[in-house]
Length: 107
Image (cartoon, rainbow, N blue to C red; front, side, top):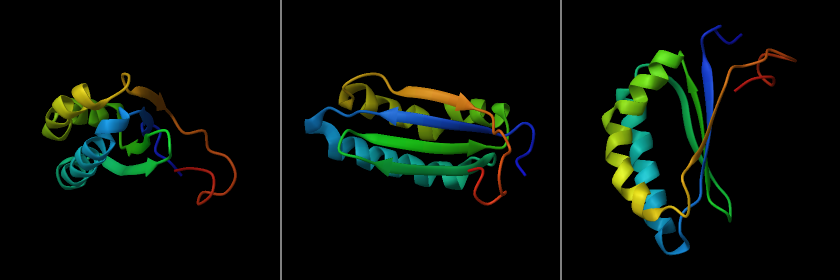
């Protein structure tokens, strides 16, 4: 079961068409940094569609997410994203609602 203070982030990232490869590379780099450096990171996974990218994240707590938001993986990502996106990322933060089986009912 998810811990009471875990949070999930769904970030939708829409690149400018001519900057898609740069944005993808920067996001992949940030994933490596986040997996290695952020202790509160439980899941940090990138998904891609024709329209852009979706980052699914799970954090041990809102505090862990806050630390990540000001850490090097994100601060270094900022310059690439500021020039490469069609619009600002859409970030949604959620708390899990336990339902169904543990393996199928949560991230």
